[in-house]
Image 1 (cartoon, one colour):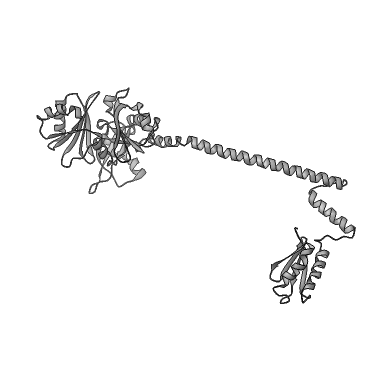
Image 2 (image 1 turned 45 degrees about the vertical axis):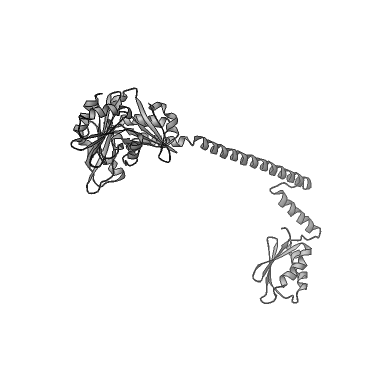
Length: 408
């Protein structure tokens, strides 16, 4: 996945209709794949296709403050920031977005970045509307190479004149919009840097002009301005202004929009399965109703005088048993039939006085044997005698057998 870096001009140059911004598309290997310039609203394909969008806010629009911060973290620090910077901010702190830099060893002071809420929300919302999934907003003054013992600066032409970006430390920098006067801009850089040496980054096409003018301003070394050193510096910045606005959550919501169709397909698949299950249930219910109707018709034809019909199969078995008993017949699962069959099967054993008790329940005969009267092979011998009669003998416990008609 790629990362899109966008450098947006100062608000003074953008005006109400926006302005052209420069951009660079970074590959996974850290190489600049593409770069160019254009209106922010025309970058939809690049924005939507990038894993992350990093917006470099003009230094003139972001104020970096050094504030003594108590040892707070998370939501408590976020809630305390407006009160901590209130005396340094003109206007209402509710109209601003804050981001605090990392703690520095040996000091309680931390850098707090301040930007106007209305301005950054417009930019972040524009990116989210174009499909951005993850947006970060960094102060441009911290995206210049850090010059140990010196100052880094950049001058870029925009619609309002010359945009000056200056970095004096890891989390120390500022920005100004200057008139379109290269000589005056060099003097301003020299004045803001004090006695420190300055590395000034300018567009390659304008470097000859600045080299001629820089001879009159001591302590300024010129370098070509390009995306590689800005991106390298931006990667080390731990100060993201996009996390302080509600619109940043819209980027996460935008990510869910990519799942709309997969979710719809999943819901449709669930509905199809639910419909299929209900159709199958209706089919089986219809079959069951048809079978029950057939059973009722057969029962009514055999017993037309039966008034109450609850379970045709059970009532049919009961009526057949009564009829068999009335005719002198005995059902194979009645007590008499089971006990007689078991008694005859005992003839296969050496001893026949093995029964301690008999219990008939639920159409099954439970036989409790006397202790130490049968050996391990006795069960198999009795089973062999009962199987041809359609009876099943099983051992349900130590010294306990159960006899019932097969298949019941």
